[in-house]
Length: 465
Ligand code: 5GP
Ligand code: SF4
Ligand code: MG
Image (tube, rainbow, N blue to C red; front, top):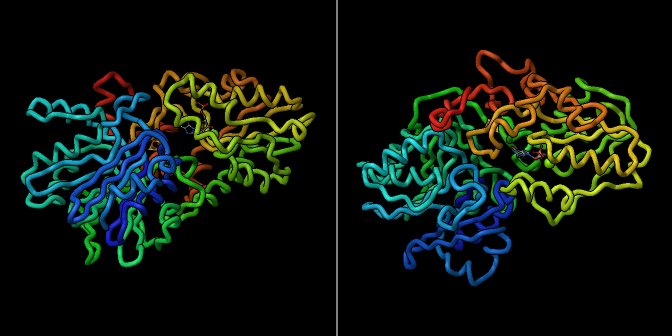
């Protein structure tokens, strides 16, 4: 998901709409915006579909006045997957005795089921199926004297990954979980401030990137400035390494590094680790593009757009059902036949999850008359599900959970299949000595099975580590 908030500029909701539009790659199912204006009070709008189709019309935007606003773009990783109800669409709003507050959450709460059960037993009435709603109920039960105090208390009970953007009548609040699994950045816009999942959304509103919110940090922003708190027990940060590989936009800056350059580095590492003789390096667009460029630069094999993407389709994996996903590949990608015929082709993609995409693409490439197909993957085999906010299927459905690399190669029917090593990936994100096995610098659980936060709900439901 993507979160965005603005304080201290007139028509803040318009900025939020633009920010969410730039974060659309983080969630395409639905979006919501809440604003506050002294006269109109809190106003809310939630819609299914793209930001550009919902939050551009004057009719909607004029219902969201004020100089304080937050918003959220959703893709479902918890709760009712695939059948989002409008009541699952964030931001969530709560009317507390201290005044109203709204929150937008990116990440996944790993003890949400346990918390929910406890809260329901004590009388909370949940409106949605979302894990994030727990935060509102925990805040409602808290005896804290201010809304930020209540939020701190609530979030200390929450486990897992959370980057939260929240608002009261006068404050914009941003919090990252102690490990800082999901991103969150601070920007300056005119006399006001913005909070965003990624820097690319600051650019669109002309905001200046100030800094990242630190893992475990809570910022409370008023018109007078930014105050920082550290409500949690300090921990070593474990940022999601997959944000670098796939999830974030290539024009964003993460941890002081350009995502694009990181992806190009990944391609270079991949070429060093897994060279092969071929005529062309082609990306599976768009997610494989920067890594393919890196592979080509490092190997000296020409880069070519052997697969053309229809720009009017979204991201395949964000389509929630398998059926649509299966269709999706052909609706979205087509082989550039003239280029491929008779050629030995290296295909670079960011990841193999179920293997559906790779299989379809291989068929299309061979149909077009390629002489050989070599897959090079910009992440290690995805053998474990993510419980921190990226939608991976159950373990059984992950190709790498049940097959060795050679078995996957045969299953996909390609001439060769190689993944970047975990150390190679760490080198590409700037860790010259690779992964520190005693104290890994990133979360890489979907590749290593080393979960930095115990996924307790999942374990209670029978998941085995
Ligand atoms: P597959 O077809 O192997 O299930 O999905 C792989 C494709 O989905 C890749 O091209 C990649 O761009 C995209 N993808 C990336 N990350 C994820 C993820 O976390 N989960 C899923 N299901 N697909 C992803
Ligand atoms: Fe990111 Fe993978 Fe960790 Fe999920 S499990 S937070 S996708 S590195
Ligand atoms: Mg892809």
